[in-house]
Length: 75
Image (cartoon, rainbow, N blue to C red; front, side, top):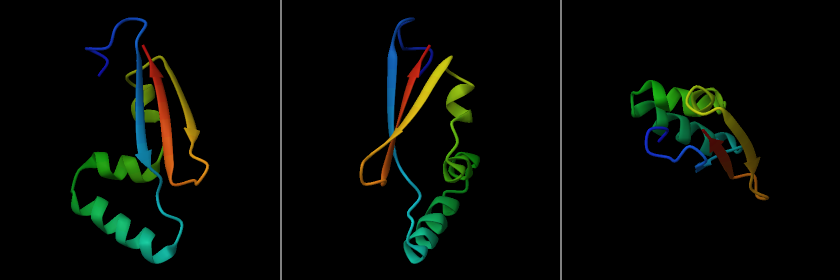
């Protein structure tokens, strides 16, 4: 993303939050871990670190329902 966005460009990334309800959260984690990648584990942690490694300015906001998050990334 960093390579193709303009110097003053903005990248918006919307992701689902990890579910709060225990049974659904367990199913979510099993699905993510079955993907087998380090990216899935990084996603479950929910941090901004992967985006901060790529972009100089990263901010996070959450939906009113708490089910999604939006990362705003600038070069």
